[in-house]
Image (tube, rainbow, N blue to C red):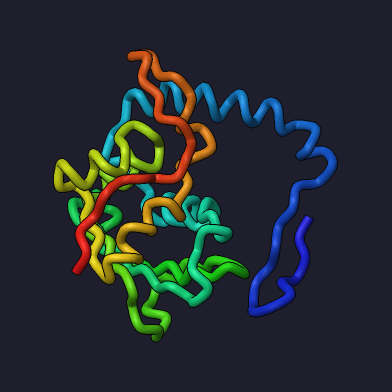
Length: 182
């Protein structure tokens, strides 16, 4: 079902009763995909817009500071067909999160520089946020307090805790880890 948003433009989508009844099947398919398709991760098949839309949906707004925080994501090592998607912004507020494909015109509080594949692997639970930072695939820059808090605001994919064929799984918890203050 869809309805008009209370604020701003666009629509809000909610599952119908039929979709709710089907949720168990969808969850099982998602777990299967995480276990087997994620194990065969191919960076050339990344869809960064879909990835960031999902990241936007999994922000723990209860952990956000009272003021709006704007995060600019800068991606590198993108698949050829994704080269136009080099940057996006998340406007984070306790009342909601917006994904912007163009500069929203607000001051940027944090900058996340990431290899596209590393961001996807972190999101899917194949690599921890801390390991992404340590290995250089991720960097977070900005005021120290925001840099430290940032990973705790982001939750992983709903399926990040699904065990993989190699037996590894990362629990679907905030993407905790250390980052650099700028």
